[in-house]
Image (tube, rainbow, N blue to C red; front, side, top):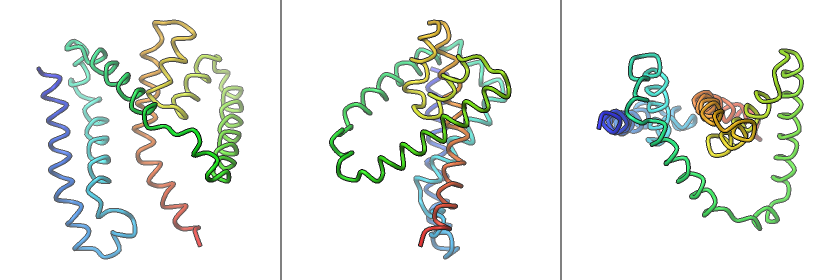
Length: 183
């Protein structure tokens, strides 16, 4: 019950704040629309991520006693299933240029991972799971971690969740940078 109270409490608070902040920025600051600050969805994601990261530094992180990992694993399976249901493999042929951009992106990603792994002398496990957490997220990082040892699946989940936390903010910044260089 405590687990549900925390989850729904955070979600409710994020929705409440997003419903206020989106329209506020949209009507008060004209420039805010250019940076998506008028979007309720933007504020919902940023607020819930920030609260989640903030609570991880408090005693709330001890909700594992209430079965947080089991609930998270259940939602992980739902996430994987929903991703699979919405996938259209033939859409790759509609815009092959995007496929090329993705291939270049993966080449840069693999190069950075190999160089950093070599510099810090990281084991293959951390490189493989870290890479999959960056690329595939929480849906596939535990699978890669389990390939090394079944008890390492939670490490994959943790790396993916950390990636989501950092990625929420970095994706927004990346979008702003791409918007700045777009013609």
